[in-house]
Image (cartoon, one colour):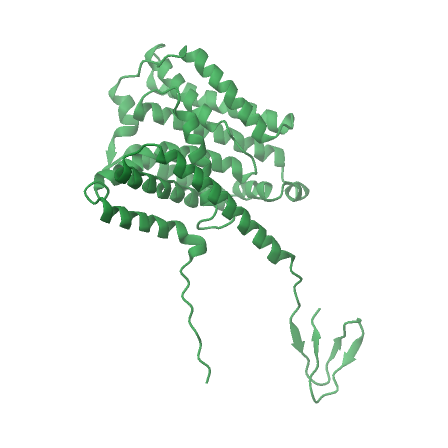
Amino acid sequence: MTTRRRTVRLGLDRFSGLYIWALFILVFSLWVPGLFFTAATAHTIASEQAVGGFLAIAVLVALVTGTYDLSVGAVANLSTIVVTWLQATEHLNMWLAIVVTVAASCVIGLVNGFVVVRMRVNSFIATLGMGTILAAVQSIVSGNSQPVPAISAAWSDLTQVNVGGFQIVFLYLVILGLVTWWLLDYTPAGRYMYAVGGNADAARLSGVEVGRWVWLSLVASATLSGVAGVLYASQSGPSLTYGPGLLLPAFAAVFLGSTQLKPGRFNVWGTLLSIYVLATGVQGLEYVTGVQWLNDMFNGIALILAVAFAMWRQSAVARVRRRPSRAPEVAVPAGHAVMDPDGQAVTNPGRKPPSFTAG
C-alpha cells in the first residue's frame, strides 16, 4: 500500500508580493500601531500612489511591445504645467484645458512613435531625448517659475472628492487597471502587443504589423502620462520637478510586477500590486525612522532586484525549453506492427511486449 504525499503549494513564485505586503502590514502595525494601522494611512497611501499608478501603466503599455518610454515623467510634468497655465493664465474652461493638454500629450506620443518606428532610433535613446526636450519646453512655458495654481471647486473635486473614504483619483486608477487588463488580456490588440514584445521577428513573419503596434503603444503611453499630469495638478497643484522622480518607481513597479501573478509577463495587476507593496514599505519605514530619503533607496533596490529576478526566471525557462524532450514509450500488444527507430515495420511476436519510441 503506497502512501501519497500531499504537497502544500504556497504560490511563492506568483504571490510573493502578497505575502510581503501582508508582512509589512503586520510588522508596522505592531511596531507603530498608532500611526500605521489606521484608516487614514490606508486612504493616504491609496490616493498618493494613484498618479504613480497611472505612470506605471503608461510604462507597462510600452514595455508590453518591448519598447522603453523614458519620457513619461517629463510628459506628466509638462502636462501639469500646461493644464495649470491654460486655466490660471489663459483663463480657459477647465474641461477645454484638460482636452488640449491630453491632446498635446498624444502628439508627443505620435512623435515618439515616428522617431522609433520610421527613423529606427532605439526607443531608449529616442524617449530619453524626448524627455530632455520636454524639460526645455516646460522651462519656456513656465519661465522657470512656479505657475499660479488654478483655483475652482470643480478643479479640486476632479480628484479629491471622497468615495468610500478614498479620494476619487484612486477609483480612476482602478477603472484604468480594469480597462487596460481587459484590452491586454482579452482582445486581439493585446495579443498582438504581447506577440511583438515577445518576439518581434516571429510576430512580423506571422503577419503582425510590428511598427504599428509599437507606435500605438507609445501614443497610449504618452496619453496616459498626460492624464497623470492633469490629475497631479488637480490633486497636489503645479510642480516643476515632480515628474522625473516618478520615473524610477514606475519602472520598478512594472518589472517587479512581472514577477507576480503571471511571472515572466508584464501584467496590470502585478504592477499595481507592486506599487502598493513598495508604498506600504516606504510609509512604514518613514513612520519608524522619520527620514524622507527612503523612498528613492527603496525603489532603487526594488528595481535592481526585480530586474535581476526577472532575468533569472527568463534564463531558467530558456534552459528548460532547450532540454531535449523524450517521446513517451508505448507498449505494443502482440501481433501489432510498429515502426522501429530506423523506420522499418516490426511485428511484435508476443511474450514480452517491446517498447518503441512513438512517432
